[in-house]
Structures are given as C-alpha cells and as structure tokens.
Image 1 (cartoon, rainbow, N blue to C red):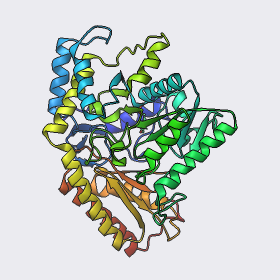
Image 2: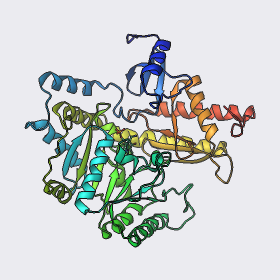
Image 3: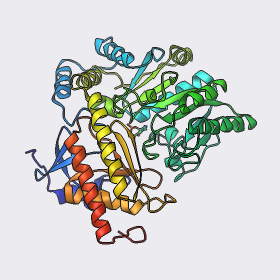
Image 4: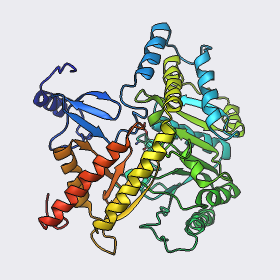
Length: 448
Ligand code: PMP
C-alpha cells in the first residue's frame, strides 16, 4: 500500500488553509483521498478501490508501466528544451502526423490544453488578419485570459462577452433549437453559423476562427448531427476564417471508431487547426497544436520566435510516443468501441425502465446519460447530483456531471475500462434509480 504522509483530516485542513478555494475538490462535502492508481482503478488511504469513470487524462490507464518506463529512461538520459536538436520531437511529430489527414502536417508542442488553444487563437488571427471568433454555447476552451474570453461557460459568470466573440447555438439534437425530429439538423445548425457570420459582417467585423470541441463535453456530451462540421467549415472559410477543432478531451481514439472525434463527421471534413492535450501524456503535461503549412507559414512570417520552455522536451515526447504505443499494442481504440457500445446499449435498456433517463448518447468511451423530470425535458439536476453521490458512497464508483444544467452523467474513463466495469456501473445506477422510485424520493424540489 502507498505510504500516507498525513492523516486525511490533516490533508484536508492544510488544503483549506494553503490552496486557493476556487480550486475545488470532487465530492467537496466528503472528498476522497487517493494514494494510488492502476488501470481504471483508484485506491484510497485505506486501500479501498474505486472505479474511475472520469479520468480521461489517464488515457491508457493510471500509472501504466510502459509509460513510466519510457519517462524514467529518458529522464535518466537527458531533458532539455527544444532549441537543441533532438530525435524525440521529430519522431513524435511524425507519429502524430500519421494519425491525421495529410494537410495537418506542422506541429507545435506545448504543456496544456489551454496553451494549445491560446496558440491556435494566435495562429488563426495571424493567418487571417482578422480578430473575431465564433464559439458554441456553453463551450469551454481553457483557463487563460484569452480563452476565458472565448468560453461562454466561464465568461457568462465573469466579465461578460467581448465584442469580438460571437456565440452560436449548440448543435444539440436532444435539447437544442433543432431536435431529432428535424429532417436535417446538421444543415439547420450550420445555417445558424452562416447567419451569425452575416451579422458579424453587418457590424463591419471579420472572423478569424470558428472554435469548437469535436464533441462538446462541458456542453453535455453532445454529438454533432451529420454534415454540421463540413458545412460550417465551408461558411467559415468563405468568410476568410479557419476551423479550429478542440480535441483536448476527445482525441487519441476515445471515440473508438476513429482516432480523432472530428473524423466522425466524415471524410469530406478536415479542420484547419487541431488542438490536443489531456490524454496525450497520460497525466504528464503534454499538449500540441497541429496545423497546415500555410497557417504555420503565416505565423513564421511575422518574424517572432515561438519558444516554449517545456514544450516538446525529450521526456514529454518519449512519454507521448509510449502512449501511442500502448494505444496500438493494447488495441485501446477497439476496446473503446466495444465497451463503449456495450455501455450505451445497457444504458439505453435502462432508459426503457426509468422515465427519468431522457437521453443516452455517445461515441466510444465518451458517453452521456441525460436525466430529466418530465416530457418537456426539464433537467433533473438534483437527481444527477444524488446519483453521483450514491455511486461514490455506496459503490465506490466515480462519475461526474456536465451540461449547462449539470444533469448529464458523463463517462470518460481510462480506455482500459472493461465490459465488467460497464455492467457494474449500469447495475448500480439501476439500483439507485429503483430505490428512489420505491421510496418515492423526489429530489427536484428539495435540498439535498
Ligand atoms: N479544451 C477543452 C475542451 C477542455 O476540456 C480543457 C480542460 N478541461 C481545456 C481545453 C484546457 O485544458 P488544460 O486544463 O489542460 O489547460
């Protein structure tokens, strides 16, 4: 068992005293202290095991030994900034290039999803010489000042919307303005972006980029309707802008059928810039921007060096390559496809028995379960919080919520998540919802 340096109450007291209170803990009324991780499991200070359905960062599994070994071997040899010529950065870029469409052939390595998106913004603005950005409702693209500005999820609670930022409707066919009964929601939602571009032009402004996650996660595990991205890209490019796909949460085979979630939109669609992060280093801070020769060329032409002290160092790149190796060797994409489908099937069956389940959606191991109180699809926010709480307390299963009303249970586990794990989670959710029904527990009007 891992050594515990402090008693849990001491850790908590020190955390409250020393760490900014805006850095929140999961389960704030009774946080879990985790001392060890393996695969899809976490272990607390008493050696109790938790099933982790949340950690999409530890993509190939917590503390994977192949990743650890690659890191240790390179640390032992050399770590240095990318101004020195080294094999790892080029070998890793070449491996990433092989996963992407040919036109995305130039790479910049950074240390977080936020750094990647900030650089994407600079690239887009430099290339197009325009400033304005279109984003989706409730989007989140990172914690830097520049990204708070393009993240409605954050700026709506803070200083508000900048005049150069424009918000398009979330293409959500369950809850949005065009739903599953619409004959062509992809086209209809893309037309809202077209309308927004026309409005921007009427104001005498021009767009640099359309920025969106390939599957909006904070937005509530949303799957774009078919045809949406290609149409939006067409409208955005004809207005002089570029399409930025934020794959920080969704890349590296999470969707199972493809390596990148933007590929779910078909072969006729390719973004101009792709940002990646979270799963890339399995927990090591490693992120990246991939773009075209033309966009990279315009960025070089401004004559200003791009230097990032830690970005692309030999240790980070060795770790990144080891992650790619494990994805291939353990067929984690295949696992995500198989287990994700099974999880979705089981949840869909559960929906037939529990009215509170409004929608089940997902791709691979990116799955959302939306809870609603009635046919009008009123969000069952408190019930979702209750289910999360019970899963942790009764079953030691970590799940969390997302979406504008926090009523979507999200599943983004490490990619080694098994069929048995999926079955266990669904059984437990079934039991919790059945218990609620049996005891006539109606949470939506109560404090919990
Ligand atoms: N983009 C998306 C879609 C994200 O979910 C996040 C992090 N939650 C970021 C960007 C920012 O990444 P980081 O926290 O690594 O800066």
